[in-house]
Image 1 (cartoon, helix red, strand yellow):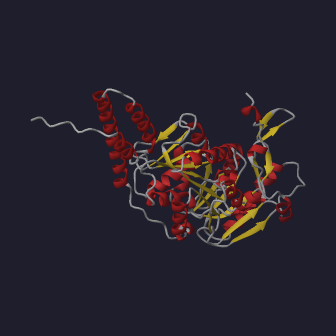
Image 2 (cartoon, one colour):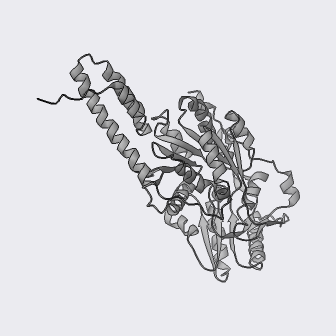
Image 3 (cartoon, one colour):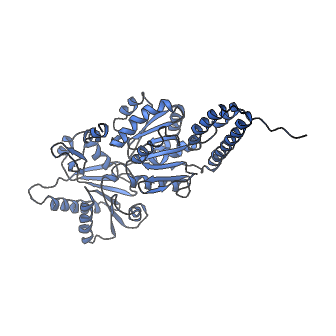
Length: 440
């Protein structure tokens, strides 16, 4: 007597699909819908059998991701570690959570780990955006190091021209531009179960477009978690945008920072020489304070190279001068994050203002300017003029010291100048001719 082939029920397939990878669920449901319309019972069962095999393969991948999730622990010295239970509860019980924390709180590196511990990152990927490629790469390296996993396995990153993501990747770092581009081919972001938008307070065009798109998407993706991180700069605005989403505040600096104002003299026609001399004077003042690395903010690559050459000519004792800007190779950028002896002076663009933390910094020198993208209605072109930074940006720069010991921030402008500056930097959408994007 031959054994009868077991009949596959469509209802059972629909139930099983819920345990598949999110990126497969929609496709598999569509296949089931189509197979149900096949009138011939034998043909329908053959297609159901193929679908069942696909479901089994997807479920096996989910199980492998669950069992393969690395062991998770949290550095006790980071302020966010003290709030991890509150953050975990908020994420578990809400679709959208705002995490407001000063620079150095550890929110960027620890939030994905909290999500992993909640079981996220198994059926989908935890997508974690950064405003800059350098930050995406270095944050991915840091998280992988803390999870004791190889880059590209459980933690990966994707930036322009580089893709270090595999089938086992649970946490994916990327620029916000990459996520925006992915929407063109994945309108519902089905490959993700969590999206973390980091440094949302920067209000770039990409970030604003993403926040607008995600607000419309979330009701259609009730299984998608959204976490927005910001410095303590108006988090209520982000909360209100997402229906009064809960805000979890995390403290930042752990040591006091002494702010000193050393305005550059303006009685000379050579402002570059004045600034260079002011930097020399500030470096000398800080070297007299004791050991500790110095972070100097510069406007761009040319200024960094010129200042680095000038500092190297001073032949400061036991001192290494390192540049940090986006066009450097990955190897040269990584030197900033490697251990060293003696004093290190890091010359960086505003990439070091919020996107990443340079370790060991005890002192900051802030000239108070940056290249800020702005559209000129007179010339009809987008420009990068050097402008005074806002009070919020100045405080972000100040927040880069005081992590390892009491810090000192020397501002190369007066206190009156600081107080006269705008409180926040204008969102990029107010500094850009974005209208042609919607008028084609």
